[in-house]
Structures are given as C-alpha cells and as structure tokens.
Amino acid sequence: MKRSPNDGNTEDLDELAAEYVLGTLSGEQRTAMQGRLETEPALRAAVDAWEARLLELTSQVEPITPSHRLWARIERSLEQAQPARPQSTRWWQRLAVWQGLSAAGLAASLLLALALWATAPPVTTYMVVLVTPSGQSPGWVVQANDARMIELIPLGHDDVPDGMTLQFWTKGEQWRAPVSLGLVKPGAHYRVPMERLPALEPNQLFELTLEKEGGSPTGTPTGPVKFIGRAVKVI
Amino acid sequence: MKKGNAPILNSPVVPFDFEGCLAACAQGDRHALRALYDHEGGRLLGVARRIARDQASAEDIVHDAFVRIWTRAASFDPSRGSARGWVYSITRHLALNFVRDSRWEAGLDEIGSIEALTVPAQLDDLQLWSGSAKIYRCLEQLQPAPQRCILHAYVDGCSNAEIATLLGAPLGTVKAWIKRSLKALRECMA
Image 1 (cartoon, rainbow over the protein chains, first blue to last red):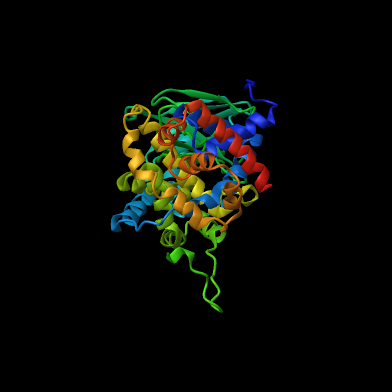
Image 2: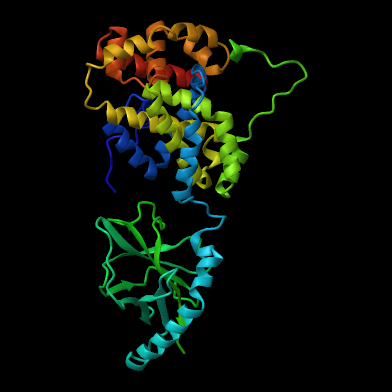
C-alpha cells in the first residue's frame, strides 16, 4: 500500500478532515479526499466527528420552498436509480426474472448440455445456459470443466453499444451479493480461474450485465441484465 | 422570526424519525423518502442554495441528494453518526463538489458579486442564533474575523481565497485563522 505523508499523524489527519467538512479544500483535494475516505477508516472517523460538530451551523440557513417540479423530477429519477438495498427485492430475487427463464431456458439448457456433453471431456460437472431475460433466447454457455476454471462460450455475436461493456457475475444461493468475474467481449471465449471463489454449487446464478466501459463502479451490477442462467449439474 | 419561537406549552414537538425513514427507504418505501422531502426538503434546499448561490443549481443538488439518499439508504451506519447528519452531509458535499468544480475556472473576478450576496446578514444571524446549540457558544469564543471565516466557509461554501477577498485579509492569514479556529472549536466541543 502506498503511504501518504499524513500516515501516522493524527493532528494532520484531523485538520484535513476538518477542512474537508468545513468546505475549504479545493476541487482536486476534495476528489482525492473522497477517494481516501473509501479506504481509510481513521480519516473517515475524523470526518464523521467533524460532521457532527459542525452540523448545527446549518440552522443558520433559512429554508426555501422548492419549486413544484422538484419532487416530480426526483421521482422520475428514482425509476432509473438502482437502490442498493440488501434486505429487499433485487433483480436476482425477483420472481418474474425466474419465471421468464423457466420453460424455454431449461429446454435450451438441456439440449445444449446434451449437445456439448457429447463432445466435451467427461469431467464437465456444471453447465449453465445464459438466456435473455425477456426473449429467452440463449446467448452464452458457461462450462465448468473442473473446479479451477470456468469457461464462458458465446453462441452468437451480439453488439454492445459504444462506451459499454458486458460484465460477468455469479452468485451462490447463500451469498449476499453477486461477485464480478470480469469484463467480457461480445462473441469472445472467456476463461475464469475459480480458485478465489467457493466451489460451484447447483443453482448458482450467472449473468452478464451491460455496464459502462471499465465495469460497474460499485462492485455490484448496476446496468440491465442481458443474459442470465443457473448452474445445472451434469450427471 | 418564526424559527426562534419556543414550543407552545403542552404541545410536544414530535421529532422526525430520520433513522426510521432511512430504514424504510432502504426497504424501497417511496413514502418514506417523500416524508423526508416534505419535512426537510426546504431546509436542505436552503443549505444547497447558500453554497451554490442560485436556485436552479440548488434544486439540481437537492435532486441528486435525494436520489443518493434513496440508493444509499441501506449503507447508512448509525454507529458513524446521526441519520439527520448523514442527510445533510450528502447534500452539503454535493453542493461543495459542485461549486469547487464549477468555480474552478472562474478565478477571482466573480468574487465581487459574492460579497454583495453574503456579507450583510452574517453577523446579525450569528447574534440571533447564539446559544441555540453548543457550536454557537464555541463560535462566540472566537474573534469576530475567524468567526466569519468559519461561517463563510461552512454556510456559504466560500473557498479560502473568497474569504480573503470578503474580509480584505491576506490569504495566509485566513488559512491560519481557519486552522486555529478549527482546533479551538474541537477543544470547545469536546
């Protein structure tokens, strides 16, 4: 880890935190600070303390009646926002997504499983067919030949808009959130070492979402699901 | 001034449950966010307006703040501070990011107009509010000039250079006042 000049100096750290909350840091300093707050708990604690100390200064300010349009604007934006809410419904917990996957997805996966199993080495243990959430047309196959590597195989070549990329995710049933397996080029084979993840399990979820170039900034899916499927054990 | 009125006898003021509101937002309850907007939207807009200095930008900031409150409500951690403070911090920092970015190029030319906007009411306001919270008692112990530095920075979103212009003081002096005042406030608030 890179050490900054402020490491180990609580007085400097506190001064920086105070000036950040007060508002006198420059734009550049604020950006740097907001980056550091993600990773430095001591700095974050100092900032939290200053936020609490100075909060009541906001009572200096007279309230202003917002224009009538403001709430309507906020409400419209909520439609597009992806609420980060761990305990409530997310897309992978939504029944409709899974209903959409049921018949056609299962049929496609069984057919493909058989077709691929006929040619693949007999060590394949898991198979996933990734289909579109609405059209139920298969787009990719995930194949696990052993416990160390999974392979993502394109069935077609679909285009991704400029400035966007496909990101590959997986989530076991007991996991709290999906884990990124990396960025994927449309139409290209992609291999992922699995040693840093728990062993594959039946029903494990795999999906590809459309994200801005460079991938999801939050570490969890933010864009629309393009392809989705669950792992089926191949006997 | 209405804000200074004491609560009427026997009519308990029910405080708004900020923490419960965030918990409900985290569960996807739109009514909770609307309740927060109805209760606090005007004050948050006031805070954003003082920093951004125009109504349209302030409304943009409050819009962004409410979207952020909605998407991040689940990440609110009560062990780190009050829910009300969290809501204000989000709004203030969005406003500060906005002015630091948008005024980056503006240089000092613009500051003349800021002076007319922000200076006159400040000291009266401070008199008016002194005693209402501990921070004001601590602020009163500072000299008038450092006091104004803190308020111009926190309330008006002024940069060090803007404060120096407003007070007619050298930039280095303003920076030193602020550093010293912050230390004094920290000790006083402890």
